[in-house]
Length: 328
Image (cartoon, rainbow, N blue to C red; front, side):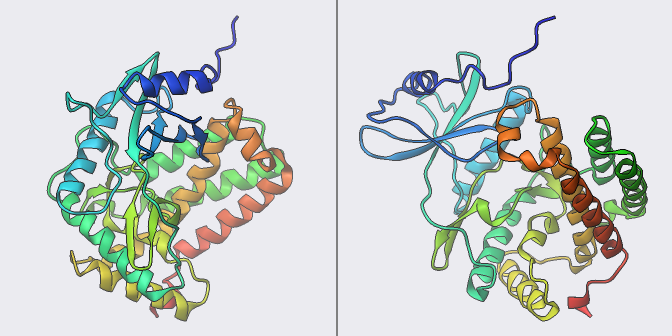
């Protein structure tokens, strides 16, 4: 039986260049590979020295319709004045391109650095930026992309992790016990009690670029239907309760320059953090046949990682049952 090739095994530098130039560009230099594991992403410059970020989508992850819906929302956001990286369109208005079995899109490079989450002015403008995005996001709903489904997503992630031989017997038992308890906690939440809207889905500081007090959002690859807090909780990172409250106050004050924030959604922050923890390890495990993953995450095959991960999950399980100290 023939072993299937990894998804990007045939994506050579020559093919990358020929794919981009087939769209009407001429590249005077070589493409520069950027850090990206799910997709393959390159920075290039054209004959006018304009810089572009080119994304080759992972085969089989999204349908064409799901990718196009992401692009269409980016165009809608850009038309509304929200600073985002909207993809390039050819003369026929196409933003998703098919070349030699790969799907790709070109985005203008947005310069800048990641924001500083200890800087109150950065937090305020990030909150305002996300609020502006959500004000557009609530105008209509996705019909092709996913909707957040915490219970099933967490269950599927746990099954992925337990399907391999990553843990010894003791670790497996602990993981099964904790993940089952977290599933019960997630299942007890009335997720339908909050409003669902189009969100970025992966709103960490690596997907926000700018300088001073001007930032833009990039990489909408995980866009989905979810509560607004899905795009806010990753900005609240401080361990100290007083500093966490400062982060929350600045983010929400900025957010409400564009859209009201339903504070009942704050109760979902720790459950959403738990879901991300479970899914992140499952994501790495599920992609292990892609050579980029063992090279980037070698520690995941060691017992120390799983001991640490299990402790982290137990800590998060306890946090889900407690009111945030910084809101007391």
